[in-house]
Image (cartoon, rainbow, N blue to C red; front, side, top):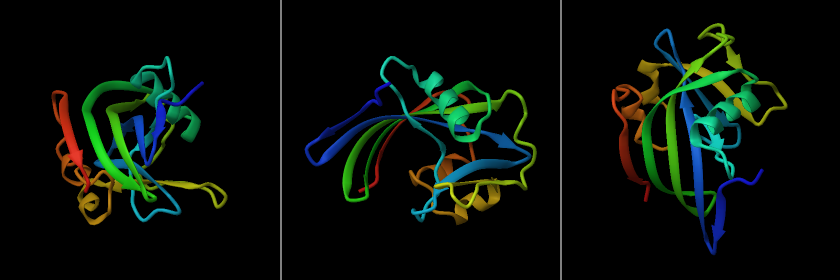
Length: 156
């Protein structure tokens, strides 16, 4: 399948989906071990795939678990720079349910030495102490919306 990512000169147009799993007042975040920031678990939407299917696929690929996209929280038009490249990204962020309840506890760190990503349960009260991207999540994660919100976020 083809990712919905298009390089346009010095910029990239990207379609991404991500999910939020909450357990016992903790949220599951991940970070690339090469980056100094945390983010939501997710990835690029593929051609012919809707955003809910994509986030469910990403959790299966990354963590080996079956999840259900319960409801869309945010649709984000995100403008940022990553590794010296400018991005214009459309992002769909869902509240996720761990269908089989395989993520057993908030004390577990899901990572291995050879893996590129580190997954960790973060207590909500610690989220503000972390660098989270996009930065609006530091506030928004503490108060998940009850209805869909459309956000336009410009990092620069």
